Length: 154
Image 1 (spheres, rainbow, N blue to C red):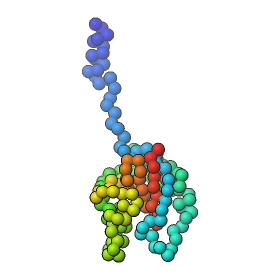
Image 2 (image 1 turned 180 degrees about the horizontal axis):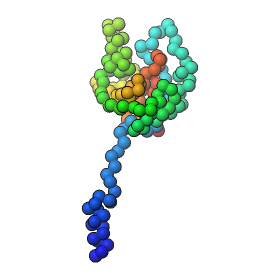
Image 3 (image 1 turned 120 degrees about the vertical axis):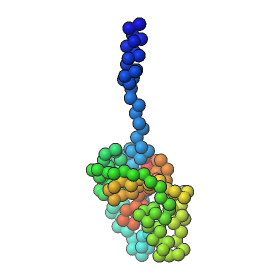
Image 4 (image 1 turned 135 degrees about the vertical axis):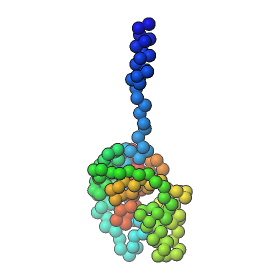
């Protein structure tokens, strides 16, 4: 009887183990796997390849209170906000700017050329100047200096 009473007291006080909330889908290690010249890059001017070479294979770790990784992705105090954007607002509105400059540019087609599907694309605003756009829960893309980098979750 004493054992049963002790178990009941243990459970009733919530000591059987607190419910643990799952980490958001974006928390974890992400590795730069590929980079392509961004659709908005000026075709006659080839982007600098040294940054691309420096980032491919490197890892960015998104933690609850910090982003660690190579410059410019590291951030001491991110302010995360998950939102959904239409294709025109991806990469800080670059596709919409292209549409305005060239009436033939279609933001939905440009997004599709980078693997994005659908009318709404989940985006992580970090508060650290870098926005992360998700193709799916294990694949993300970021734009930096005329390249679009793909990251895979490990």
